[in-house]
Image (cartoon, rainbow, N blue to C red; front, side, top):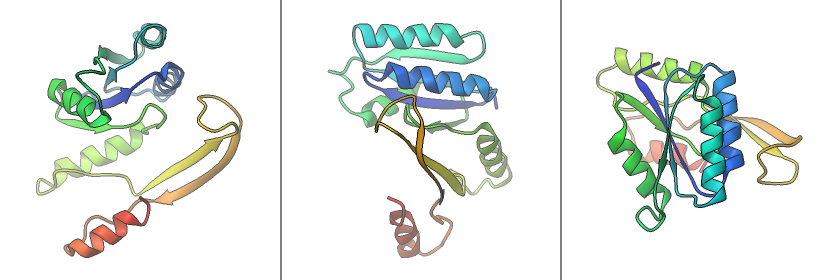
Length: 166
């Protein structure tokens, strides 16, 4: 999985960055993690401290993206794509977790299916913590969600399937 980059845009959520890096270290993530951080001051420094804590276990680059130049998540991701040096990549939020086994399955599928340009998993786990959008806490709910079927030749069927979980 060394030929894979995980792009994580973030803004003022250093605790989520720290949690994500801890999880990826525990999962044995072997790709590159590019964190595009538009935080300033203490929040940026706290994210940098988390990167420093895990840089012996993970290949992480923490890139400052001034919010004036990168005002949206899309602008940050576009820049991260432009500096990625791997053949495969994915963008995930700072509060999401990408499982390495799913990445391996997608890369394997793409290498065996040259007519495809993208791949995604078939299921994901959604969870909420007590207290709302907090980085740590007790689990309040969890559910398995099937991803949309995007392999149909019918564009209407692909759209309906995608919107089912949007």
